[in-house]
Image (cartoon, rainbow over the protein chains, first blue to last red):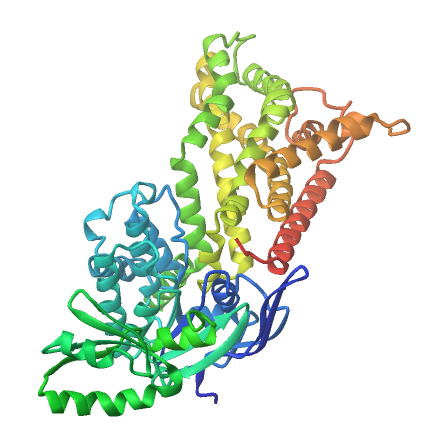
Length: 312
Length: 279
């Protein structure tokens, strides 16, 4: 039995003559929170639509729970919760009616569906809107409803397509907390997004897609070995440090920004910076209060793999 | 033993009511019956009743006169109104929306992401549409059936004797409209847009019934209209009027209609299985 819950082999998709997915070999381990990252139009939603049976592969193979998609779609979907990118729902129904309907289609008896819906509405923050019609909801509220829908029936695998695109910052934070909770509960979560910070906080696995091709995949901690060249530094005397860094061969640019020093290094001599900085701080008896890469590790991977921001 | 059998039946019924097919049928029919569209369409189908209720013009008295009057009335209204252009348009408007709107709005992806077979989707949507049509056309027929004994002072006897005629008209209507509905559903999965489906279906139905038969060498072009075929179906129970000028056997018509309905539903299912839903 494969260790991967979702596995695609050479998954390729054409729309007419246009190739949207190209030999995609996804490997999502059981229990992983897998972030599917890529710019707009990279093929994230097409991949998810193929995983959920809305699109058929032109060629290649999809296996979910070891079963073949789309041939065994009905069996697979008993164990999957799907949250679409656009919060789709039946406009004329109330939230409660809609979710009970979706729960019953998932195979839950009516009473059990109603019980789960009440719980999930409270969990996703739409409990007070239970009898509002879907058409009366804001896009953020709709997104919460579709999140509740995805959780109905306690699925083993969650496929979430851009789940926070319509949420406000607070809603996003709340959502991230809930996904972490679900991950701790042992669910496998496949989440697509183009918001790096979000993926970084939630995911332990990541797949990077660009122009329909998977260009990187694996554990986040294994991938994050790309050195940064841009650092935020805060010491007890910033001016002294700034003066020291001036004219150093490894410093391309250094300036103070809102009380923190931003240091841009020349990649070729960066190592000397890491040797000389601690020596200088010790010599001058300066306290190091903050030292961190200006960009996050995932951002650095993205920048490197997508050739963004590496050339002047 | 009886208790076990009772429990078995109850379990079977409970399982059936929890099956996706039944859930979809129940919810879809509920949504259709609550919709504003259905209320407007009901006003249209009920219109002949209003005229009839205001001026029933009883000709004679007694059960026989009542039945004769009912049959004449239905022979006038069915081909010319309820199953004429207006009735057909109503059916197309209602049925074109069922699957096409799911595809058009993308909600079909929600159904695909559930453990639901496409055959169940097609069957549930079709039967829900047919249920709504049963209300739209059944209510006006029912009112006439209930009102006639009052006009002809036949009381319960009239009600009892008129029941078979009422059921025949109702059944024939549903059978004919089911054919139109199945055809529309097939067109709707091909075209995917409710408005274009309605236009294409109406264009096709109009072409088949009224334009093609005008081609020279087609004998008895009126035979190809749904109204005519309905009257052929009514021949099996309308005994107070002379329908000998309507050639054709009701049994053959029923078989033809059932085969055509099944064919269109299978084509709908096959097309749905084959197609994708990128939007």
